[in-house]
Length: 141
Image 1 (cartoon, one colour):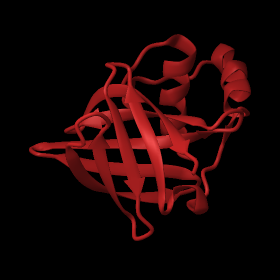
Image 2: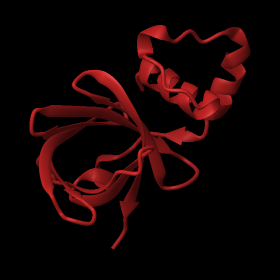
Image 3: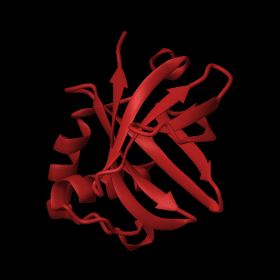
């Protein structure tokens, strides 16, 4: 798993602050907390993503449904008015990398699996700028 992605997400979940990856410094005092936090995470498997539907929420209250297709594409719909957007996804080292285009805007985030409950988390960038903290949950049929 990418250390910078993990450190950034740890900082958000442990200190409740969004900061840029380049500003992160993991101190010796934080290392123990990070190790404990990291032990609650897990790798995401392809079978959990391909041809599945997830709900995505952010701290601003925006809620969407994301359909991940087997071919690495995705469709996203606002939950209540079904406004569609599209994008792509990939798995690398157990991390789920997602890109979504909405008009002129490009959103990117990396989902880190949660080993304790099926609600995962990510830090989102909009047009390459730090944007939001996300929670994503798989919808099981």
